[in-house]
Amino acid sequence: MASDLELVALQETLYRSRNPTRRWLHCSRRDWIVDALRRHAPADRARALEVGPGSCIYLPVLARLFDAVVAADIEAAYLEHAASLRASLPNLQLALDNICDTTLPPASFDLLLCTEVVEHIADAGAALRGMRRLLKPGGVLVLSTPQRYSPLEQAARIALLPGVIGLVRRIYKEPVLETGHINLMTARTLQRQLRGAGFALHEHYQSGMYLPLLAEFGGVRALRLEQWLERRLRGTAGAWLLWTQYYVARAG
Image 1: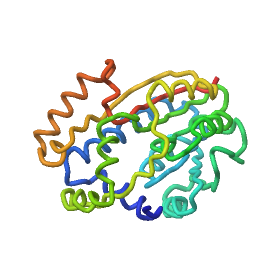
Image 2: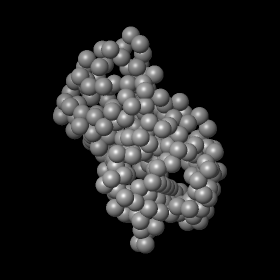
Image 3: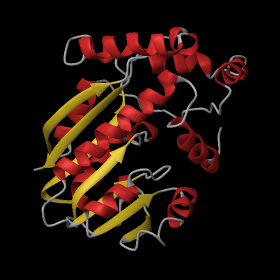
């Protein structure tokens, strides 16, 4: 299993990947989330929380939009990485915290960001209830997570097998590590859990078409085909094929 520091290093390389599909999948997700944060930041700036900051690409955005930002994680290694930003982001605070059993003050945040985290948590319902507890009434949750049956997640199960991962690394010529995804959900399951935790769904979006082998060997031409397919599938019954599901929800 990859260490936390290895995962941080991997996350930082994904946005600069030499593979067009790999780079697009992660950069398009980043761009949607940044746009959602800008659209839903309150006019009075207020307080924001990011659960699971990872490589910290969103913390500078949050720090510009809010008066106070807290980055919370159950793993100290991720917070140590985030600590390097505090010199340039004086309104950033760090908290070692388990969102499934959070000790942060209830109803203390206006916006909560949780991107690519719940798939690493066995009890996503408990995590979502913890997020609801931390948001003020009417507060905004911005959340993303992979879709359970997307081709990328299915291909990853094969690509990360012990006898295969070495070949995949040679193809990409970049770090390829285990995902640690233990709780992939369909859109129906996640939406049910969001409502059960006390959220009202406000926006739902999907992105990220991946075509096995074409993505690895087809270069820019494969990327153009994937982008075309993504546009055709989004919002249809076939949207489960897209890699990432996104939500903007409000605390009831």
